Length: 125
Image (cartoon, rainbow, N blue to C red; front, top):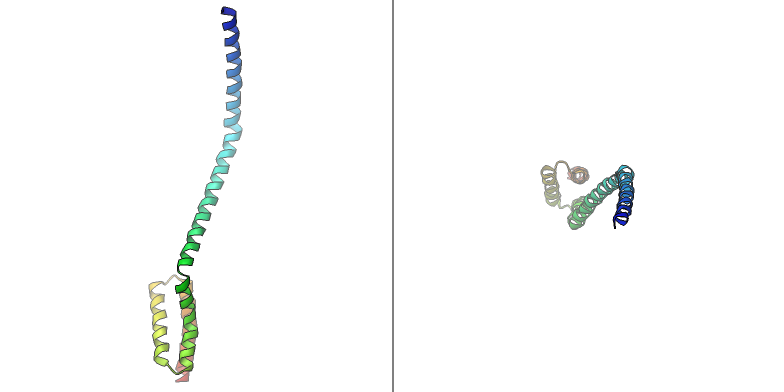
């Protein structure tokens, strides 16, 4: 009994030392790499989520954007048909959009195109 218990205790100490060594190696080598990989993954996942949200917003506004991009051509058609009041109404609509969304590059771009059409229409008067 006593000798067997002593051997068992010695084996337990050896196993414990081996486990402690493995845990030290894990905490010193593998854990920092794992933390770095998790951090990198978290950053990539956040980036992917924000891109997905932007795509979702764009898809939900696709119809509105298409209509907005058609306004300069519509103004040109109205001017060609001498519907100058409609040209001015469309121009006012775009200018209001620029006032509501002053940081929008899309609105500024459409407004610039509409301003050119408006000037051409005024010249045609």
